[in-house]
Length: 434
View: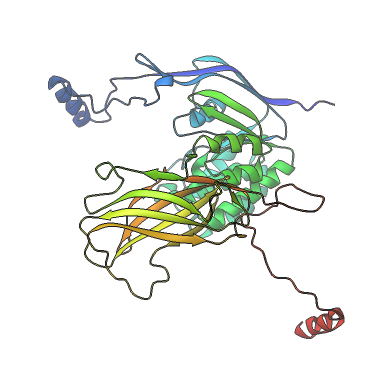
């Protein structure tokens, strides 16, 4: 028995016109008129930056997008900013209409696309729950059964009878997600707005979405958090410049997507005049050093991260560097800084220097990694180098009958020992502890 389709998008296109737009106030219109009079760019014009989507005065946010989603599927949507993800969700949610193509939906849809979507700011949180339920076609008795569960999940019990206009963005997201997920929609659409919530609430949201998925309801989930995408979704659609670049199993698509953002070089250097930084300090080089002549790094091999910089104007001891290490799923593995374990903070003399961090072997799991370097002064972040270096940790020679990749972000070699005849004693000790 085939699973019924709940979403069908066929050759969907969405076009916006670029150029002059009206201002929200008379002052904005006067600024635009004065700029045109002086021959300057219109300050109200919102122009696209992706040439592949811009055609004359038209900007095509989506260009021939087609896909189908079956009932009970959990589909992730990934892509860079401007790729068309939010536009697609707005079309699916019927907030706006496609310029060309067709979209067919089967069932009741609940969407959380922006902070406070669907809320009336003058109404209280409680009243907005009933309003959203009515929009979804639910009866008051149905909403009453879910009301306490929604309020409890949102964690804003003390403010539920206050007008939503007084809520912070985080409170709006909490209530918006609680309403969207608990009113039993057939299709749940969630955009990146979950990033507004704190870590605890994000875990609750992911857990609730897994519960929704297990109840054979459909989820479309847009996020830049690849770990969350892989944890929740079986399938991922990758949008690039308004087109579907890849559609397939989550792990395959995420790996391909992240590989396009990873600099394959393990050495980056800049001319001092163009190096990232500011007038006081510039990073001139970031490289990975191996022990020995082998160009490959295996799980057994230690290596060093070296940061070269030029100090031009900082004479105190408050200059610091750290690096963030991300794996192929874009999960933060670790952060390490130059001043972390320093007993004293001697100042750097003016001129060129290098700081290096040694990473031991038998620590990181196999896979692709990238480095982000940050510069600080007196605890204040000065700048980052996002497009830094990247490298691959290869598998060492292994014995046994299984050669797949081991699970886990890290893979340290931990010490084990055999304690012969200690099971009973250990069990007794455990019971005494209880």
